[in-house]
Image 1 (cartoon, rainbow over the protein chains, first blue to last red):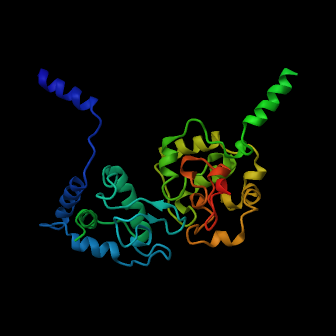
Image 2: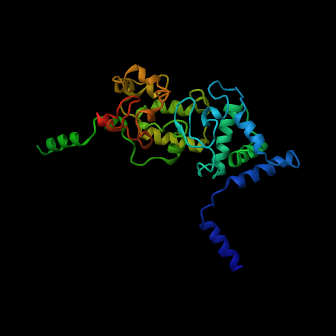
Image 3: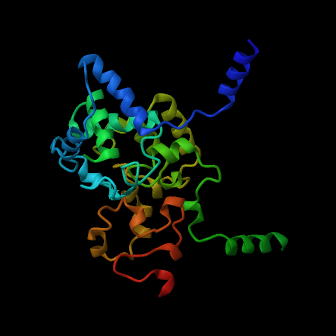
Length: 134
Length: 156
């Protein structure tokens, strides 16, 4: 009992551990597998998604419009010109380290660029591509 | 007399546009995060409180983008903007809600050659950081201006 209490207190005292891109892939893959049994993330599909021209938005037809063709390179906002740090976690360790931030940006950018919310499968593939780059 | 001396001293100590470009001493972290990712987090003192209220009421159509926020975060940011908004309303208001359309912006940038706005590096007048190298830190001082194709002001 004492152990449990110590553990609980410790858990409260510690800041939430940073999440990793791999954990996010695992989470999204599990969600995707519910709709699509046997789902496995694919960097190749992720690359195709990253490069695909959705052409929903004139100024932001695809991911590369702001993030460039090379996710390890810095980009710039297609409308405001503001500098954007690289998207790939190996070039910018801040990326894919907080799930709430990742969800916020998927939601915004998917509706803007893809014209709808992205599926869990697309998110898993996307991050898989960014860490492995197919 | 003492008061006059104090007044003169305070005039010398303050940079010329301190009132317009002062950044609040205590910056709201949600504002910095939410209003500073697609563009520089523009100083709250550059628009009137009425303009900020209108802007924050229409985030779902924010200059062509959907920038909707969680209602709690929105309220928090709006309070910060209102508390630090421009006091001189006329100079800092625009029907378009664009800071770049305010009389203050036009006056401050009347020396900028027209061609400079068209540089690829600039892209948009909303891109403060293209010339104001320290805009990210809220520093718009003259000595930190670097116009594209020109030497840094300080070196001239």
